Image 1: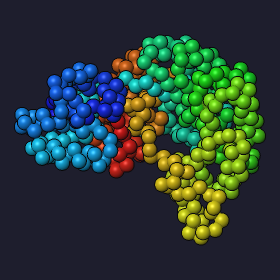
Image 2: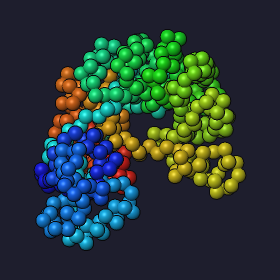
Image 3: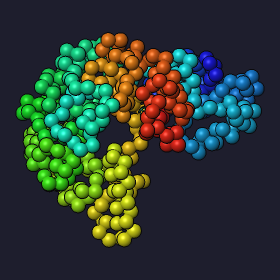
Image 4: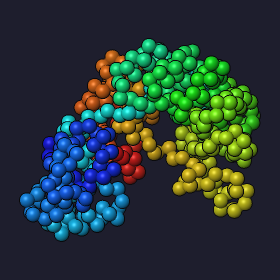
Length: 417
Ligand code: SF4
């Protein structure tokens, strides 16, 4: 429905968020209706807002109506009211369909507040299933974002307020991490290291810059509670050193009375480390860390673990200390969140290549953020069209990194707005 104008139903918080997060979408709005609107249609938006009864006049039957409220029951009730007004059901569209249309016809452009910039793809470990070490098809390469590239990127894109620094390597071995964090602090940028760190190495200088409030969250990958178990997967890793580093950080957090960075203990479940779970949970508690279990990327490993957990649960014994299966917050599902990055926090490789999401490591979008500009890259027609297609739960477009994605499954409806 190229360039078709819509009527919004509801101008509450959710609607205002759409207007804020999808610049340009207001240009596709003919007018809005809201039960709290005044009689004259006067509003603080760039379009008029009337009472819903205006739709009863029959004049607007052909204009699509977007119900912006979130509560499913309220949506259902509004749909009934609209049908009673004579609006046909196929003219009532979801916010996702509206934004997808806007992305496709160029009404909306992307301007996210968050980004994922992999500052270091190098790593000192040799983890068993890491794609950086075992995949001959990986195209990430080895390298670092320089301090000057980091500063230029932030200065050219001052709307960015949050940067995730980790992706394919170990951010704490970046020799200039301290300066990168200082530049982020200067610009009041929130930093997360939430994709993960092995945290085997951290300098005193960096530790002290972790407690000034700039770094909000650190996810430490620790798949065991003893050196023997930990090092089966984290080869070259030193369990005691990781725990010592966390204690050093905690001592500084106490000294400066700060809750940041929040610390996550990420435990990838594997056959060999199920025996250490109870011990790890106790230690995580002692260290003030939030425990999060995760399925392995290794499909065979993940399904073997699932079987063991199911058997334990069925036996009803010996499984009390094991994390419970899906639908329980304990185990995070590998299939969620990734597509959302395309829109809300695009992934950039250390050399500036646009990856889109952190699941992309065998190709890229053929666009370089450092050379072509961040906004130009994420607003290229092919990128926007792919976002629109995924929002509609359609297939990823050909000749894009999403084309061969093994995670994409329309049934899970992972890309939301
Ligand atoms: S389809 Fe796959 S590659 Fe594309 S954004 Fe989603 S998870 Fe990432």
